[in-house]
Image (cartoon, rainbow, N blue to C red; front, top):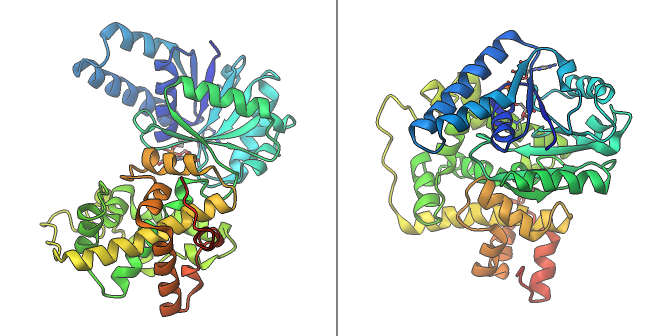
Length: 383
Ligand SMILES: NC(=O)c1ccc[n+]([C@@H]2O[C@H](COP(=O)([O-])OP(=O)(O)OC[C@H]3O[C@@H](n4cnc5c(N)ncnc54)[C@H](O)[C@@H]3O)[C@@H](O)[C@H]2O)c1
């Protein structure tokens, strides 16, 4: 079994190290910050102890997992690895620098992967001499629990690197999907309207936060409403992803961030972690207006926008339709694959809703994907 090294022992890095060690790999977890190593060690012990308490792991298994992980501040310890996964801060220059260093330290056949959420894999790969062995492996938080992993080959990545990477992550029991090296990959691109359109509906005064959340859960079957979810993710993190995707798409109005969320972030109303976001968690959450007709309209508007994103991702060959549906159900727990959903409600109905919105608002934000028009013309379904 190959040795796996993880660079960066923060939230994602320590979770990825836990997965690899649980799968039986010898693991090296490197961080250049003393506190991070101590924190990761403590956190991992705590998580594994809890699994022992819940009888999901025996004491012996726990000891074995811990003994397989070497926590280190010495980057030279990553030598002889077969796979490196980088999970340091989201900064291109810092990532490029560390990839240049790693490239020199490890053997020729070692795969070098980044867990970046938004940066270009091509640009990270270009910092390495052997760029064909560089790839994106995007886990979701918390990594040990979330089944989805997006695998992102860059233009430089070889077929062999892609095949070997997918094999390893599949063996770890994860659901893998392959995405093109474009902003937001699959999930962080296709999911934008879930937040953006919900905020827009609120800004227009159509409904309040709790009514919009209720509509998506009650009629749509989503596990969490958009405002609850943004509060859970953190308005700072969610806003930054939106802004990054927006600028990376050369300011396509479809991904435009909102002032409402920006002000939340600026006010320090970050969500659950600050006890206040769209909701004030020190008080009772306001009751929604349980108007089913209004709720259907709200769901329908957000869902059409989501389907439009998913269809456009198929149109632009970001991923296969199957992988896009898998990504949204396994990565963000959507009740159904968006393209399956589109077939169910009728692509002509989705197109009509988008055309109505575009006509009403005159905004490019609502432009339908050419694929939807083509499918309606040809009377086709996704499946
Ligand atoms: N948190 C999430 O929900 C999430 C989900 C998917 C992907 N990601 C991506 O994963 C990466 C890590 O995110 P995180 O949330 O775990 O961050 P984090 O801040 O929790 O951890 C980052 C760690 O990297 C270390 N570090 C920073 N610079 C370093 C360097 N030059 N050398 C070695 N170690 C260094 C820090 O000490 C810190 O321990 C980012 O690229 C992020 O975009 C995050």
